[in-house]
Amino acid sequence: MNEAPGSRRSMRPATRSGARSNRRLDDGVTRYYRLYELLLVALQEGAIAPNTALPSEPTLCRQHGLSRTTVRRALDRLEREGRIVRRRGSGTYARAQDPRPPLCLELHALPKTLAALESGTTTTILSLKAAPVPAALRAIATGIGSTAYLLERLRCSRGEPLSLTFAYVPESVRGRLRRPLARASVASLIERLGPPTTTASFSLGAVPADADTARRLAVPLGSPLLRLRAVLSDEAGRLRGVLESFCRSERLQLKALARAQG
Amino acid sequence: MYTRLSLGALSIAMSVNTGTGVSRYLRLYRVLAQALLERRIGAGEPLPSEPSLVREYGVSRSTVRRALSRLEAEGRIVRKRGSGTYARAEGRQALSRSRAPVLDDAWGLPVTAAGQTLTLARIPTPGFLQIEQPEFGRTTLLIRQIRYLEGEPVVLETAHVPEEIGARLTRGRLREGGSFLTLLAKLGHRSSSVEREFAALAADPTAAESLGMPIGAPILNVRALARDSQHRILAYLNLCCRPERYEARVAVELREKAISSGKARLRSLP
Image (cartoon, rainbow over all chains, first blue to last red; front, side, top):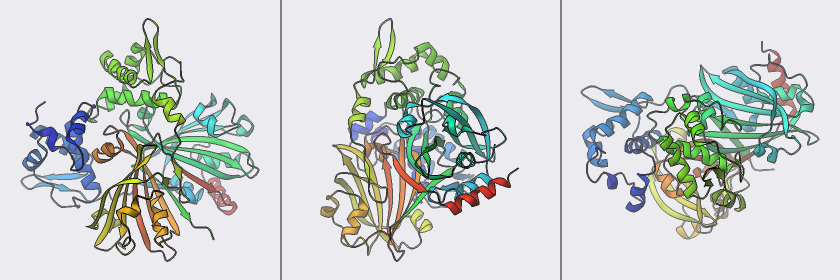
């Protein structure tokens, strides 16, 4: 470790006990990453406003009790991610927000917003085959059976992966599911295969990316991904399909609007 | 996603990973812990062998052992000499099954027992809020609470409330439990619409400490903007939730008209 003495204490945010933060240092998280996280939050929440200067490197070293190398590593990463600009002889500045807003899917306005999302993105079919349905999905979609027809697709925007979707369709609904339907959404595909889907129940959670998902979505192993599960049914309550999507939520926003009844 | 713990992962994912700030052992540990939690490796079933984990994740034997040791220490797996490593029925995963999940209120926001109020203060409206919701004045009330269920922290809730709306909020009222919007309704500010936005984030130091999780672990983030019937902002909530305790739910009725317009669009695609 090349940090100055006292560094452990000084990384401690104001509200917590020293003993616990010391233990966290053995938790596999590096010092540079902590500083990076602190600065990232300050930048995201506007505590350091766009175009204003960040504290100088020596100040950051002093404030957080870190070595110059550690501070630079954190700043390097922020620079690489386009969140700050370093101007020679002047200092480091917060960059204005990304002019390109993330894509957005409004669950309450489906399928309209899905169509909008589709027009700006591309999908790749990764597999289309009969496959066992994972237990977690069988538990929420009763009647799907232990095997179903699986459509696995990767959605990208300007070449950057957004989401990886596994859609399971009961054999009875499979019908005319064929490859040329590359760009349509899974929900619209299911729509075309039989009676209209009238309800969709979503559940959203956060999971670490496993090795295969990490590779597909070009994120580090264990990165947080938003997991969207959906059960689709028709008017009679019959199951039309169940799907599971892993989304990079920094690139694809998911929203839902609810209004009071009456 | 489900069957691939044992094949096909190769070292590509790991090589993308250098410089993420979170050690390899911790990332491998999280991936395996998630597989156990979701019962992709069911109780009594074997985990992939150490050599196959080494191969699959492109990490050293000692990294694999460190991840497995931690899982063993937490009682999630058992290592049987000469036989292999097995998922345990007891331990945290079984426990999490038996625990009640966090329930939703009418707005799809988590309902928990009373919270521990960390902050109740008048602050200058933060920059991000001024940009996103210019209706907030120069100052807002900031309320930060850790919300518990069965004695465990499950949600770190940060609320920004316009001063006139939060005038009657006290630490005493905050101790009543229920959801924040229920509390506002009791004070006469009934929500009429709530917009929620969902994201998966790496736990920052504050969220990690409040929820008793490692820094960088995935958390489910729900941001909600509540308005009353006059379209006035009642509250902007930012909830960091422990993902194994809380999943957000959204039920959608797909309207006939919207469906047909979706179909029309589809037909025009090449």
